[in-house]
Image (cartoon, rainbow, N blue to C red):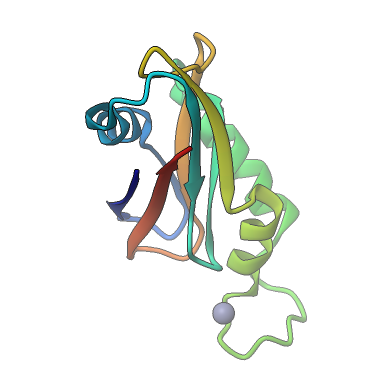
Length: 130
Ligand code: ZN
């Protein structure tokens, strides 16, 4: 099973929860148990798993990432978006999630978030069920 989600972002930096979209994408496959690989094919975006119940958590993570990696610094990359590249490396480009009984085996409070660091853009998340 191999599919791709499209994610439209609306801000310079934001986290967009995609847990439901990933769950929907893996359902028709009929694989009850396995592993779901999520891969973001972008150098200024990423993917992470964290709390989805309280939206303040994603805001706090973004606030700290923005403090850790300031927009104004003596960056050499001419495109002017080095902070986005750096945040992408900090957060990472992939996640692996166990699938059991056709469901993502996430913890009660966990959600999957697409992380935009140089938006707004139209982005992709590749999904492979193994
Ligand atoms: Zn760049």
